[in-house]
Image (cartoon, rainbow, N blue to C red; front, side, top):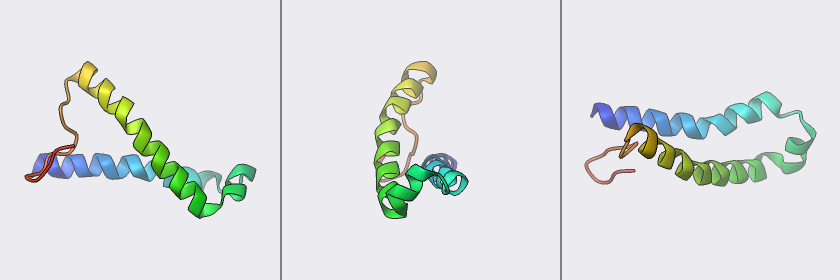
Length: 75
């Protein structure tokens, strides 16, 4: 249960980073052009894409096998 809570918190905070960036820089020209829907889709896809190299680095450097451990599946 502790590993599941910790992994869920890590994943939620990973996907909260673009939201925090949006709130911090929402008045910038490029974010105004994109709009919230397009930015959300782009940020989600980018963060999902960047999760793979981060997971590879965690596996090689710290021997972390899974980030989220549940009874049904492991990520």
